[in-house]
Length: 340
Image (cartoon, rainbow, N blue to C red):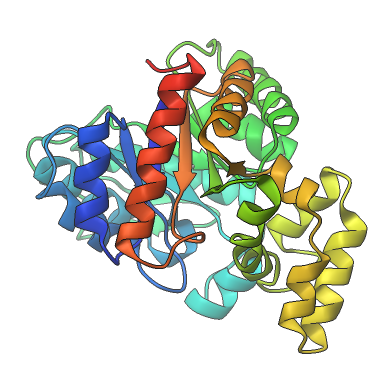
């Protein structure tokens, strides 16, 4: 199992360079309220030499497929072939509220989008009239970046069984979030079913969950550092459509999710954070001292994880603090016996 780290735009260069020196295989740039993925990865491409660059993830509603293909080709060229294209349909409320984009039929939308991106990256002009996207005419979609990454790996963020199966069928990897080892095992089984439908096995398929991470003297103290991130993620959009609330319910914490949303609706953010039990955070994060985190890493490796992402931004607000978590996780990785 390899290691990856989720970057933020603050201190991104320092974190990416340190990750490369510590043996991390990849850096991920998430996309949300604070920064986009492409700008951050463009910066990091020029400041690193070996580490893979993963958009974790570019939001499908934010860009037409032609621009995504062009951005992917540019980042891959700038980085010497190190870019990996992670995509996700995003929360429906974000798709509409931020991008004014449709959020219906996410499976069909994703399938058509990935197909268009792949066709564009082949270098041929693309004409397409589909259910969700139309390109072509007198000015067809035609990416001229050289060299073109026709075999660029595409990863999909997915949660539900149908989305996981689609990832197995049409993608080269899966990006997971906020997930326990048993949930990863179930996800891998769904992905494998999708691979079978496409006539392939799991060989070479990237399984990459990213976990909130806090190194501390004990799990409870470390968990407290992550509470605000959980509140933020579980508070996005409508409760019934929020992917993180859905994941919490699947893990048996439906009442926790409901109470958290009730506290948020009442304006009690501190109360919402207090609702989260330590065991819930512990199941979906890496928390505690280095030896304990090493044990948790080994648990994830046993489920089929090929690359484990660590999120360092929630538990520390300074670059120095994030670098300390980065080093702690590298030490845990070596101790776990899963390093590859």
